[in-house]
Length: 363
Ligand SMILES: [Zn+2]
Image (cartoon, rainbow, N blue to C red; front, side, top):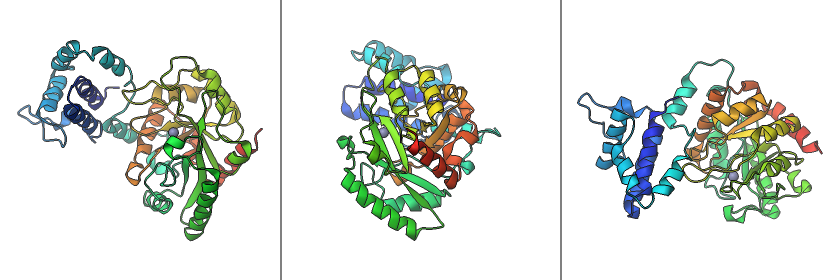
């Protein structure tokens, strides 16, 4: 698949990383993000005279790169600058950390393609990884409900960080009790319209253990377990991920690799082995749609399809304007051929809860 916006953004990123002034570095990074977030392929914004339509945040120097890449498939200008830069090695390393990241335009194209058995946005009724202002998000619980209703969802889970991740303002269990009281009150208020599930994003420690006790995990309806450390190590971490999916009470393996766009590779593991175990234990593998994560991507997700896994497709939204991230995850699922029936976000609430309870009892 050719994702022209992703290619153009890559060259702008290269240009950003070799800048010596923080201001120009920021400017080219912002231009790259603007290209990644366009709704349409950037070549459709060329005018008849060969110039580019005005695009917010894309200045004259970035436009020069865009036109060069559209004309020749690469930017000789950026390449020369990279060759001459003391940052060259870092740029080459970062180029290797941008594979299978979809631009918004490519995600929209994947969403629009006719494919009967994969999930579409209209099948999607619940976002199962989201953060509120109780931990490191900015949306209140009631705002989460309002946004969910406005998107036509019937339920969703708030999954703030666990106490093991204080850097993300993880919730001590005493705060969890208070949060659950507020969720109960909101669910009573919105009964029949929307149901907010009590979730948590637990942290998978480097040794594969989850940072909460079984009794604590049992207090949640949805447990996402996700790695947040050792994400730049090239050591094999299969044992870590196997231990996580085998932990009773874990429902979703969240952003399984922990990769970050142009920045870090995430966990190295024998993923087939991990997926087979997840399928056996009934743990859903997440496609985290945060544009900077896109984790799993469609290649790896396809291998999880073959292994028989269930899937969760989530936004990982920390704010009300990030819910569309779920669509990036949906696009990866569609490209991977994930069957709709295996996407837990598309299940009716009762089916989701029955599955979640059986997973909580598993020991
Ligand atoms: Zn996380």
